[in-house]
Length: 467
Image: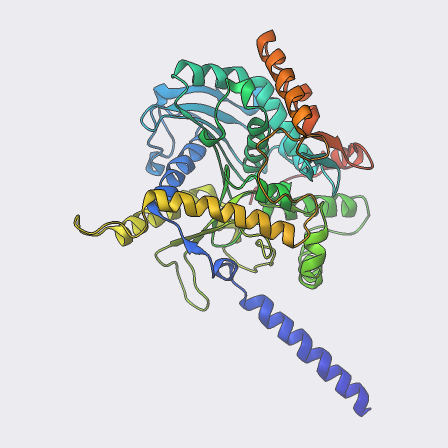
């Protein structure tokens, strides 16, 4: 009897300790040791966030929500594409040329809970389904990125050439669109000659509320061009909505079970699973998907403190502990919303400028050239850290040469052949087929392609309610 009581006491105390640590873990803990962002590197983010928010507006000439302050010139909108025009192959987007900041922007909207096509894109994936550029990516998001390049590649190339080849090219997206933008950026970086030979330094991607769309080695490898913006806690909306849909589909096929009644059970099981998986096992799994690139973490809430505080922005290229903890928060939905990201990023930028504003006779705390060197060094350190942790397919230096199918850097002779083939394809003229170009970075998973016909059919019978 006493032995049973002792075992029960140990179990209760152990579970209580786990529950306390789980309930008291906040999003600010993930970036506690990161450095603060400078005004120069964070300045474009609120502006790009407003452009992504403008994709949600049906008519920019007479906006329904003028209080959002998109601050764009409707005459500079080159192209606007809706769901009817994409036919479900990609989320809606706009192409905008910002002459004030010399940028060509492709902005993509996020997940629409009323559109089945978005859910089909979300469901078109499984662990290890698609290998790409020596890592793994989300298959459905990659297909959307390829479709976008086939449709708009010529327009982007023409805009860059018509503006003297001096403008930067920015790809931005929110939620589901962030994953499409990130994978689109990876493809463009590896085939810059198809967009007029644009330098890598002029390509940028901003992923708001980023989707987990690529493996850890790719997330670190492209951290110099891909930037993720996170408000308080990284939203697992994409990852969990995918799991919830499969959960609903399986339960809808059985009788007498309401999927909504089983939602707390699913969240509890997912929380337990992610808590007790060892960190080393997560890092050694090459199929596990992560948020891409460099992180900009906007922190504006503290533990056991009510309300929002003046936000601060922390930045790093994390490798281990890359937002892998489950954070229980009643603000998860608002933190994922693009409206809140726009508001808090603008407040954060104003606070950063106030903090860094000094008298004219005093030099800035961090010189611009010094900060650029620091960012480059952080990227090199992150790559070396990934190699030291034995992360599959990780490389110590970013590839300056084109990657082969297995993700390795080609030899000198292979590099010459690759450059010759590029020259021939460029001189041949005509519209490039991005599906064929990506084949060199494209490799199927061990089990090949899997079409979720049953899941998609069952999805048609599920009524989706926007939350």
